[in-house]
Length: 323
Image 1 (cartoon, rainbow, N blue to C red):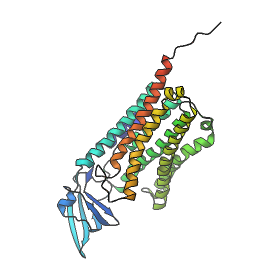
Image 2: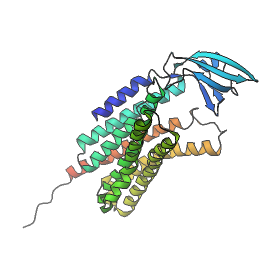
Image 3: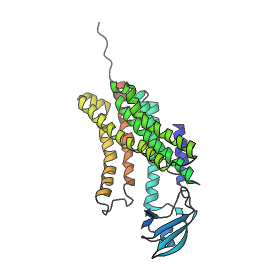
Image 4: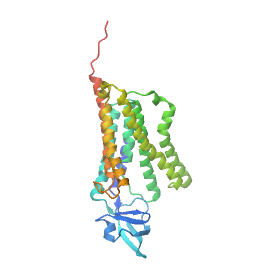
């Protein structure tokens, strides 16, 4: 927990220094210029082809000077600008996601101290690794530093999904499936392999991954992340179906199910809308990113279930033995 807190503080201090230009580029062409940004003030336009950028190594810090070489109407033009601090909706959403990381960390600490046991420890690890992911970003002086920082964030996502699914396999009662070695291999194999891929990349290249290793790394972190979260939802649903009314109420399974659905459904719906109807404006104005804030409902619901179960246990009157 202390290491995660230190990483979170590291990310927060960097995020506050993170700069922005205000353009979106796809296939070397500027597709969007945000209002009241350095890009707009410098004269960058939608449709410009970006031939080169000087000073764009790593994550940009406030005040860094960048020089864009753009092609416009068959002529090349150099445009110099300085990165400014994030502001408006984008800054608010960024700070809100960082606060979400802190709330994950606090939920994990509460479970670690007040709900001891295997389930509580797994939940605390889920919260800690999720907090690693939602810790903001830090300006990087090189592409190598940026790659290392982003790799840690993605590894946090991979391990968090594994801990979440493992938690559902032991709460409120362990399943026999959980104790099998093959289950542990499936749960923790992908993020461990992703970590090894990162180590191999450093050993072979001394820096960012090759395109092939990068594809493997993303596959081992992102795909299990989504899949394991979905499986955790399925496991909770199966437990609810098999439990009687008393167990569902005392274990908080219903609360956990509602919390997960409320956490993920808004984000998934917005992502689907972006694919099916990209021209439809999305409330919030910055795509699906703000809807990740609903993710915080998962640790809140799970922590409530854990602490409520323990309080119910402590209030159940003991039955004297009959002689």
